[in-house]
Image 1 (tube, rainbow, N blue to C red):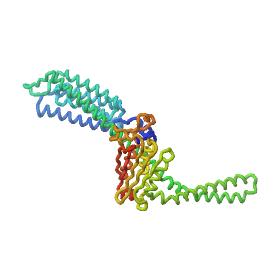
Image 2 (tube, rainbow, N blue to C red):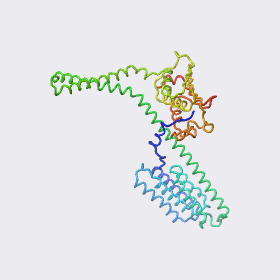
Image 3 (tube, one colour):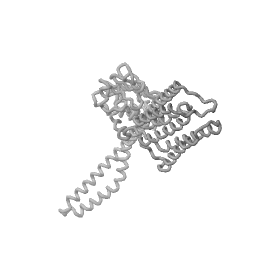
Image 4 (cartoon, rainbow, N blue to C red):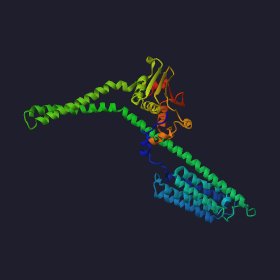
Length: 436
């Protein structure tokens, strides 16, 4: 049994498009004010407390430049403004250049604050598209390399100038660059997984909302029948009066008869809608376990796969709960996957006792691929075979089903049985009976 998500495939592309990896300006502004404060405090401590010689004019100019740019951004744009990737890249490159300038005039790579060059790169890989981040990474490596050419000494005691040998500088360069690349890769992977999860959860909410709308159509039809009943009755009365008065006039007889017949037809349609809602109201509100299973499996019986239902437990003691769109959709997705990838048969085993309710879905297909079995249920992890990848699945189906079922209080387990894939869903019985 594999994951089929043709139904959810358009959701991601229509709703999200390509990943929206843009940065909010206020976030960057706050980080830069923190950088201005940190640089200012560091310079003052080194110059006034430690009393090391420091080019105060040059360092003050660089810090002031960063503060003025930040102030200009705060005044020109609203706090909610989101930066385009190119604009964010330019600002981060400026931050990197400003930091490199400070380090260059304060000892280059010998300065203990040199690893701070990694910060703009990490921010970029966490919030910008990959190609923009790679450009900034290349620029940061170039800036780090330029620091090896610094002729300015590290601020220190005049009679104890530290000596950094070339081999040591090479080691520091390698350490900073390797740390920069590792941190950038780590930030990118974590950010990408968070984005995928957020998008998948949004798609889940869209699917659940659609299911709720479908379950509410019956109530909407009843409300429409109730509201339209009175005006249609008035139209029908007026049509009868017009027919009595103008029935003998050849010019209006056919039109008046048509008006009355159509008004009667509308009343018949509304009467059927009202009776349908009244007949099914109790069924729609309260759903026994057996009825829920039948509603889940019925749409998948016409595909040539035998769906075998095995009930373990007395039918008279089965749980009766409220209709839950999340459970219906989640179980329906599991059954659909089983039918799509079974050879001849899908087996549903339903168990219930005083403490729990369990549903096991098994097929006689090839089962879950061993290399993805431990990742099943993660967003955008498709368990399709390579031959079926062109069908457009994004790996969202099982994630949505798993999320919806877990929100209803169920626990899920995925494994391969003797003949194919097997999914087991277990609820505490109290949740199945009381869940609204």
